[in-house]
Image 1: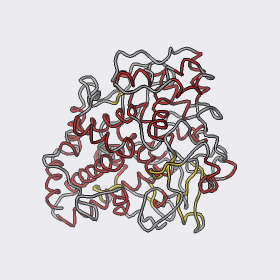
Image 2: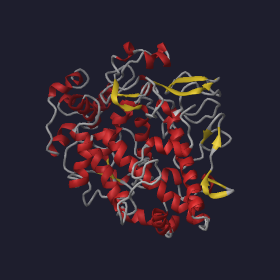
Image 3: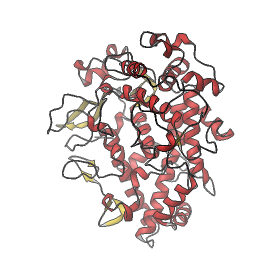
Image 4: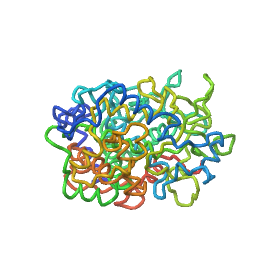
Amino acid sequence: MRYLLAIVVAAAALGATGVSAQRRDAAGSNGNDFSRIFQDLPPFAPPTAQVKAALSELGRKGGLMDARDNLAAGPIELIVNPTLNVNNPNSSSHTAGVTFMGQFFDHDMTFDTTSRLGIPTNPHTAPNTRRPFFDLDSVYGDGPSGSPLLYDPADRAKFRVENGGLFEDVPRDVNGAAIIADPRNDENLVISGLQAAFLLFHNRVVDRIRDDDPGLSSEEVFHAARQLVTLHYQWLLLHEFLPQFVGEKMVEDVLTNGGRFYPTKSTAGSIPIEFQMAYRFGHSMVRPSYRANFTGAGGGQFFAMLFDGGQPPGTEPTDLRGGARGSRRFIGWQTFFEFSGFETDDRPNKRIDTKLSTPLFDLPLGAIASGLPPVSLAERNLLRHLTWNMPSGQTIAAAMGEEVLADSSFSDLKAIYPPFVSSTPLWFYVLREADVREDGERLGPVGGRLVAEVFIGLLRADPNSILNQATPFVPSLGPVPGEFRMIDLLRIAGVDPRR
């Protein structure tokens, strides 16, 4: 470990402010806003009241995209009873944790706080309040000096981590609000659990570095730990999760041959709106309910809906919404990732298709960054196409040189708004493409290339990333040199799966 430590200590000499400034400069003039890959393609539809109503109809609760899960059956039956999954089939390859790591990646690179749903907006006028890199600024904030509330006052090299009962919790104020760099990482209990796991992972890496070189200052230890944590995180993104999203062949093609569409001179280091819509494919992978843990419900298993709109105010939620602390509100990760020796039947994600789990059509306002309706996630995603004057899935597929899905693949849209059959909102197109071309197990050629090129392009744009090291990065923290998986991170963090 000492060899790699020398590298990260040297990089840390810039200090927190210097590293942040370097990354912002690397993004270029467009690094702090959104961008457009396909400049000259027409919008999929005009921003009329009729189109807006059609999008709302397509995305409404009980509408075409609602899987209509039988919520009355309860959270356990929705997991174990296959007869209840006819409209919402399980994936055969993804575990439940993949969804939430996808959410975690998104929160690390993009946060749009200004554009309004359904109101046409120039992407370049909408600031991205996250740095457009996979640099964990959603965890580290501006470091111990710039974000002191995130860090342990007794040891500034480490994060604050609190306890919500049996196990860890993110720090919270007296009202239960999370004290973290990105409030969205407390939208639900699983993403909050991931945030806490990364805090603990960093703290354990701090301990390892101190054991390896006790002469380092607290500041040197912090920067070395941050760099080491970030590189291992990027390794997971590139080698474990991105192949699950888009397929190994697509990842290898973009790594070997570069991006065909991203980055361009006008988009390098920024977040393209086409990617922003395609990446919402993860919403289709969400289950209606999960087993959060095995021991939190009076020593028994805690099953819960992801969101349940009927929560009484002022009580500990019985669903998995965020913003609350309680004795059973922690994650037993054997439900979400494949730990050897822990065989369960409730790990699968849902397939990538045009059906979303019913709880996503009735979001609590606290799970919406703006705190404003509509509360249907599908409706919000579809209205976003008007915000960005988004081209149709068909015109983007043609511009990419990919085979365009036939109109017959979208015949179910005819009853809602006939023009959508041949000029389909990109998000819906990407979901249907994954279903038709890849049986819902990964993205198809259009969605997959948009995601792969932006992920890898952002890594290439960051001078400190895993793709820009002086010598090829080899993970050193796992049990086997050169290998590292998400379950290794969780084990090092001390988030024991036996809970």
